[in-house]
Amino acid sequence: MLKRELDPPITILDELFRSKLPSCRCPECEQTGLRLEASLEEEIDWGEGASCQSCGKPIHPERLEALPGIKVCADCQSEQE
Image (cartoon, rainbow, N blue to C red; front, side, top):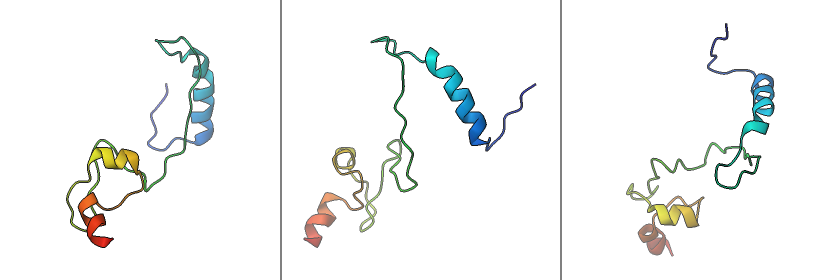
């Protein structure tokens, strides 16, 4: 019986991923494969958005999408310039 671990060894995750990869098909185009990128700790969680470091107000999602590393809202940036 397998038991879930909170932090499983990376070698086990890699083996499981590689064994399931051939069955991972896009339902629209039928191609197989995935593109994986390492997550950065400072990366923005798009589900919750981000707050301006100067005023604390939410930064608009469109601004975050266009400038992923941005830390201040448009109003505060205009004041700083």
